[in-house]
Image 1 (cartoon, rainbow, N blue to C red):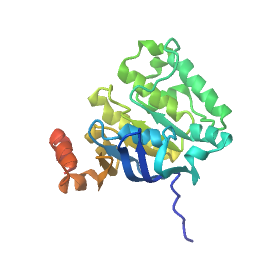
Image 2: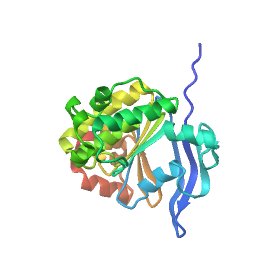
Image 3: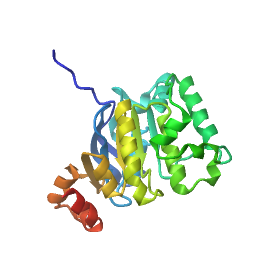
Image 4: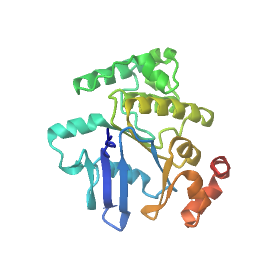
Length: 259
């Protein structure tokens, strides 16, 4: 019996995006497929990484090309499809915790679970289980969001994003405030959870080691386009573009780790 591979659920094709001046992104092609391994994007500050995430979410006007969700153009989704899109495609940005800081962690997660249930994406998991996904102890449930450190807030943002059992998770510098010693553990738990859910993951970060650890396929973004793609070891082994050379020189430990 033949098996059919899952189709990409979120896809950018020949994407060109700008803000009125020169294009920030040019000719970007990207596919995110449920059940597939996470995809990583690395690049220097200002390379256009966050712009790409915003374009995938349909928040920017696209000059050329298109972004599709389940085969439908994101910018032309019906009201009903937009509601499904918001629940199915979740994003966690560097400072993306948009909730009342006076709430307890338990209230924040419980509220997110209620919203997910109303959207037809019931999770069936407890607050403690979701916190465990991001390496937060059960005792954090009674803490106010305001009392959390920057890294703990970022981990809570990840937990909230997981409440809808997302089909796609777009992570834009999600662990910048987390202690480097904890990033590997959180990445491991996040990988386990998204694999079980069948969630397609895009990790956008300047943390080369984190991206290499989580993502078998990595794209280097520079000058508005992907200048190198592949597993991180192959990308560094064939470092010819100045942007790739620069990343290698800035992250010698990552180069050594993935050599």
